[in-house]
Length: 591
Image (cartoon, rainbow, N blue to C red; front, side):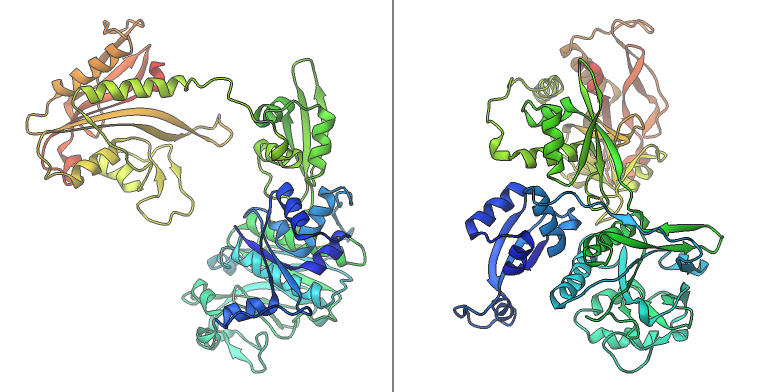
């Protein structure tokens, strides 16, 4: 969870009153954040330099370190934090953010060259007009950029923010990608000009910037932003140019965000402009910039429109466990900077339409609205009560029953990873890639996808225990996942059961006997082919099994599983020397 450091006196001034430490801790708890530490600027410096602690003097500014949720980017600076708390306690109305009415002819333009697709393909821009900076506001402006770079920007790999004094540069601007030797400019806080490749070497000794060099240093081209006079604004994601550096005297700020992820770039830009449009001459108004692509298409940023989510009242009250009227819910939601209105009211249920402002990019689903209502209502105000029933879900009951029965047949239960590699899930099983839930940013090649079968994990277990005395009899009851467009998350879990017999005498009849026992336990009789009152088996042609030594299980006209002798090629892929027989079936279909 990120921690925001703010001066206590400045925060209390923004909140319009002074709190005791205990009162402020209570306010933070009510809002769902936490006062993590109370320190001073000098104490922080002494700690960083490993100096001995000293008693704080009265003239030292007290610093509050406040822990905020990782997805609440609007709380990463004093402006956003104080604004949220003032709305929460009822001191302010929810701000309305607007885009200035500027014609396209008078709008600043950013022209994007096609070669940027080789390195960082996206850029979004905006202008803050008539900003009034003082030292505290300026420091907060810079600190918010650093916080965003560490958080949603993923150390500048996804998004890099550049801020410039608009009065020192002239549009239109161009976003290009050029060979390092062709780029030459004076970087921020330097007095001499560097070529871009020289700059890479220069910053390898810089403690702050050297950790970002790897993002572009091995590329044939570097991203670069110029103004109409070919003045360099920035070399993203490394450093801005010294020419357009913002100062306390800056009145008009040009903000550009280059990115590999357009959605995150929009969120970052919206966060920057909504937080600091507070200090503009026209409060909460942002001047747009047109981004023009090489194919002639263009987009205007920022997009400060609200989007709407329809949430049933019963969905909110059901999850929180309290009874609320529609008017109460709209009042509670308003405290969290969300607008809500009743759009449909009937005898059975009431539908609330919740309007989400550009500052609340964390609200993606009705469950996020439920969380905000619960926070606003007060977690301590929700009455404690015993669950209506302690009876487990029928699927879990059936899973436990099957576990016990298979264990009594001499099988040992295993628990394997629900994530695996694409190779294990498909190639090693001779299967084709189909309807897989893919992990977007896997930390390891071993965890690229959510498994679609229990087979990879079980075969890996046997492969790592091939020296164990034979026979090896193991089973697993667990979930797999498949893509499903009918679900709101476009994927669905399925409870599966799998068992494997490994030994020199492993045969079709051994695993067939286990199938019959499982079906007997759940009360499903073996019937003739085509009879819907029970189950039957018929020939199958699955690539992971030996041809002619496999069968599929048909129940109520649907295939619910497959069993047979594992194909020797598959066994060899998992380094298993002994024959194996295997069964896997869908447990939910037996409920």
